[in-house]
Amino acid sequence: MTLPTWPDRVAPQHRVHVNRTLNLRTIKAIGYDMDYTLVGYQAAEWEERAYKYLKENLLDLGWGSPRFVALEFDAERVIRGLVVDQQLGNLLKVNRFAYIKQARHGLQEMPYEQLRAQYFGSPIDLTDPRFVQLDTLFSLSEGCVFAQLVDLFDSEGLPGVHDYHGIWQRVRKALDEAHIEGELKRDLLKDPDRYLVRDPLAARTLIEQKQAGKKLILITNSGWAFSRQVMALAYDDYLPGDMTWRDLFDVVIVSSRKPGFFTSNHRFFEVMDDAGDHLKPFSGELRSDAVYLGGDAAQLENLLGLSGDEILYVGDHIYGDVIVSKNLLQWRTCLILSEMDQEVAYLEAIVPIQAEVDRLMAMKQALEIQYDRLRSVDLLGDKGSVDEQDELRQRLLSIDAQLGEELRSMAGHSNPYWGPLMRAGADESLLADQVERYACVYASLVSALGVATPFHYFRSKRSMLPHDL
Ligand SMILES: [Mg+2]
Image (cartoon, rainbow, N blue to C red; front, side):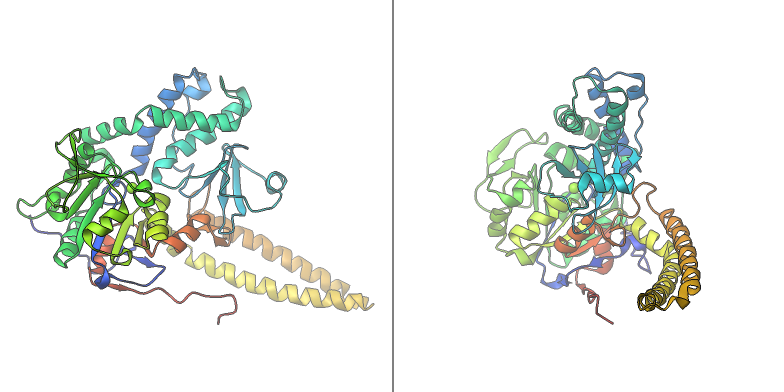
């Protein structure tokens, strides 16, 4: 087969967004996560399936009320980056300073007064284990079921559960114990067209990076049996001649236990069979025809003879892939956020609305200044401006009403429950803050790096301060 050609113009899903300048010419090795990075999944299909298994396991706890049985997965209920408050049964959208900008108790939107009463208008302590951030697309099903169960608990109770924390614990336990991941992976291999998002340009991206002299490394938490099958499904059809995905990688590491791979020391083993069951301790040099299991990032750097800033790591998990690799090892990082193409589409759709909001805000500020001046004149005993003040007040109210309209129409272009991913009110969301701090660059697809070429110099935009012109 011939390789697919690059598009003439850079589509939203191929844009690379730059937080910190990154010169790909100085990068000697590129490490890739697999699930939701090299291999794309239909998140709604996958999570609906996960939800089904999760619900089956919860049914075994005796939670068989008709309302529980009738629950269905809603892919829009939860977005990446939300925070679960296990104590109060709330889902929270917080800004970069950990202030809550939006909250839902179960499925219900929480009025502002209640929000203030519960959290005292203070930022939340994200290091408190009571709060759990939903940081990958694999969290959508558990977030959705948690919100639904909180509602159910409030109205009819749940057998054996005494508080919201108990609901979260049961959901987590059902997910971990029931080998849901194994079931899902079997389903995927049986019906790959339903679950996989194939990107022919990803194969070309890897070929060009390899030809440009980069060492390519796969570092996945998935086991060997699944990894070899799903990588073949995602890549082999798009490679020339009898080339397979194995020819693309210099090092393949499975069952890597990230974030532990970046934070602690583990032995490397060599995988000796297709099932991934037979292992032998690793020694000597890394070979491209071998498959490794476990190990850690510090050993990998030594074996490759590279320092952290010569390695780019590409992954979709904000904590397990990006925060730890950047923080502990100073690896350069690229976050794959598949929602970015929708986020960019949202920003494009709201351009005229945003312009109108800016115009109304400028008018509002000018009127407020006039109004404040009249009031201070009033303080000196000149009551002559009362009518004028009334008129200004009316005009301000009318502008507020128009602003409300515009903001509602803006919200109609993003998630109906939570709005855009990267904003919390007028501020950056917690997720956006984490992306900004830890991801050198971010994009919705691996092939965005390919469109940019392996030689690209990504330059960050000049950041704006409140006093900048
Ligand atoms: Mg992943």
